[in-house]
Length: 104
Image 1 (tube, rainbow, N blue to C red):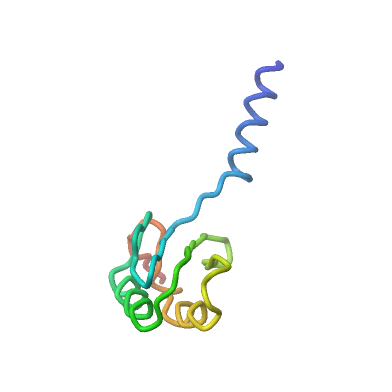
Image 2: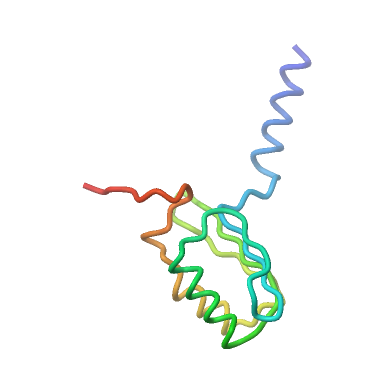
């Protein structure tokens, strides 16, 4: 019985505490150095263009929520750059698995 409680505690800890973004992008001197997850080509192009115009360092994480997607930026990214990236984010066309979802 004790092992069931222990396994349940581990699963709950993993679900709520482990950081699991759908997309993680790292920037260094205005260039994308690393990306992990589904990065739509058009969004990647727009973000790379923003980074070239205004070089910066930092991280961008995209989380999938029930109400949609949430963008989280590191503190060293300028607010103007954050807003520009939010403006080009494809809220309707972005999917976690990279597949388009048909709505009837």
